[in-house]
Amino acid sequence: MDKTLKRSLIRECKSSIEKVVLLQGWVKRIRHLGNISFLLLRDRSGVIQCVLENELAGYKVDMESVVEIVGELVETSKTDLGVEILVKKVKVLNTSERLPFEVNKRQLQVGLDQMLNERVLSLRHERVQAIFKVQSTFVRAFSEFLIENDFAQIFTPKIVSQGAEGGANVFKLPYFQQEAYLAQSPQFYKQMMVTGGLERVFEVAPVYRAEYHNSSRHLNEYISLDVEFGFIQDFHEVMELETDVLRYMFKKVAEKCEKELNLLEVTVPNIIEIPKITLTEAQHILKTRYRKVSPIGDLDTEGEKLLGKFVKETYGSDFVFITHYPKEARPMYTMPNKDNPAVTDSFDLLYKGLEITSGAQRIHEHDLLMVSFEEKGLNVEDFQSYIDTFRYGCPPHGGFAIGLERLVYKFLELSNVREASAFPRDCTRLAP
Image (cartoon, rainbow, N blue to C red; front, side):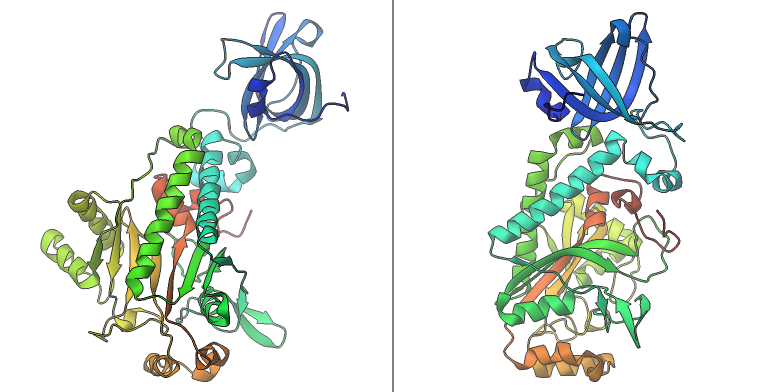
């Protein structure tokens, strides 16, 4: 091959008519018609038709092999791209074995388990790739918005001495001569860095929950989009920030992912204002409207779905904040409500009937935090480094965390949250 040529991407070819280009990618399809062959080449940016004539006609190559093509770019009315390649040279960089399933049909006709077991192949399907391009855009927009609003990106430990959420749903592991855990949340470290003077922080990182669920909505490792910021007035300010963040994220997906959204046949929600309903009100709605009895101090899966339906019908919104959860149902760092200390200044955000966020104002006073630890029956000595944070001047603060895979799962109307994870971890899956 001509070493003076640099690789071009397929999406760049429209502006290079009559130019000789070098393309590299996968063979999506090849067909032979007498003294001419047509090879469809795919790279990360798209698909282009390559025409092989004369001595190259009838060229043999297995589908999904990796090839390098040099050819002249010409206009044509016969392809969606409006151009095609008249091939001068073709070289196989790596051959492909026979595929266990077809990856180039309009729909990926394979079960979820095989899709995940053969992930390298299923990722080549354009609809599967579209999922992760949307996901990538969400994360980029999340970070962009917060950086523009003076938040610092942080990186916190995932091997910790205590679980931040309490309870038993932590993964234990030996750590030299100690016992350690995989982090359930960066919560303690977010608060410590706010108090350390950064004031506004965010993190995009995995978190771990040792919950033995095998449902379409649970993962044991997922990506959490975490935010924490100081000098807030109340937890309504936290909900306002999350509304602004989500509005920006969806706006950027609409701008950057038009092709993917059309392919996946989804529309971007117009987030103007997100309704707020207290937990007590939500449980009352479920009981009177749907004869649904909720668990004490919480909502179950069915209740969340019914509330999603109610909010859509009543407010025309896919989102709803459920507020004021009882103290017993929230972690020890959650701020009690001033008017009714039995409940907390906390919230969950439901999207299309599924919880995607938990958030709250946090306790920032040392003595009040000590009381909360005692009420929860927790050993203060186990959390001493965290508790000491509040001895040296901590501002009023709060934050939230969005489950990335759940957000993508509901937005794209996928059948299972595992489809929104490149390599999901659940209670049975450790490979690939």
